[in-house]
Length: 387
Image (cartoon, rainbow, N blue to C red; front, side, top):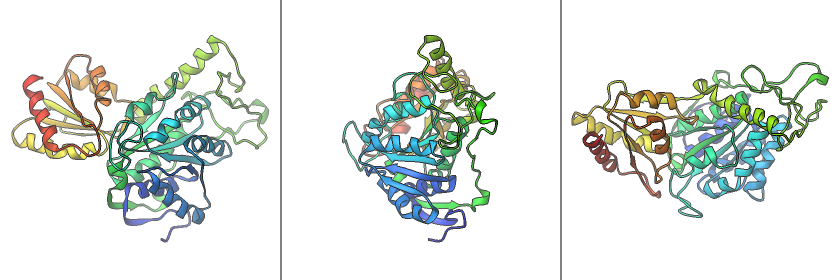
């Protein structure tokens, strides 16, 4: 493998989604990864372990996922871009530290290559059962961002985007692959490093004595400094004031949590991303994400061939959810159809935002495989009759 001076492995490659994710992290400037092997995500850290010595990065195989999810946060405050990688059982173990990253506003990336559960489940087979956990898995109120690639190319592209969003909003960002996307091998084009848009960490540049670790800018996001650079900082998971020191009162807590939630909510229009196909005059809209967005295509094409006006809305960013878009579409169409490799998670958001204006038909799947497109087609036809 031959990389450019920035360590980016440019050109066309025939690689799987896990390897593409690793290359995306390198291209984004990630130079610290802590992880623990777990199927089907292990190939990400195997690639990282192979490539990091060549680009000046540090990879540590930790004793477990709990250690991995806290090690990356120390690395961030030491000045590095950092991520960890896991799958369902490990993702569950990381929830407390996702909450810590949200509370301390530590920018980092959590890669979850989803597999069938619960518990050990089917380790080598796909699912999309971690979507609500990504949003609500840690206790309390906070904002996060979650992205859903549907190809190895997007695994590369969205890993870079995950780091950019994390640094831009000082928030943990989830990259929600699934086993199919992680293990799927396709052509991935990696641009030259100078052609890759990388958002660098926003550092405070004022007088050291005046620095407040949690004083927000106009966009509600504070600037950062590195530990050891001579600034007085205090980083805690306790409710804290703008200096970072514990301030145990409901008034301070309300102010802090409001900002943690609304720095994502108020900037949602700049974060939300989706792909829309023929939704403007549709009677039915299929809402999908990840690998399911690809299995839905034959069903949509069959229905269109038979004269059904079917649109396709693919969620590239799942969280924050495109509430306003779903709300406006609900007033115009007969029904939504939501195929998911779970028994109903993102469909609940579609129902909530549709607010009774149009029904949402779930196409469930227990995991272990992708949908048969015929099952999605059948629900599209049903939705036309019953919507």
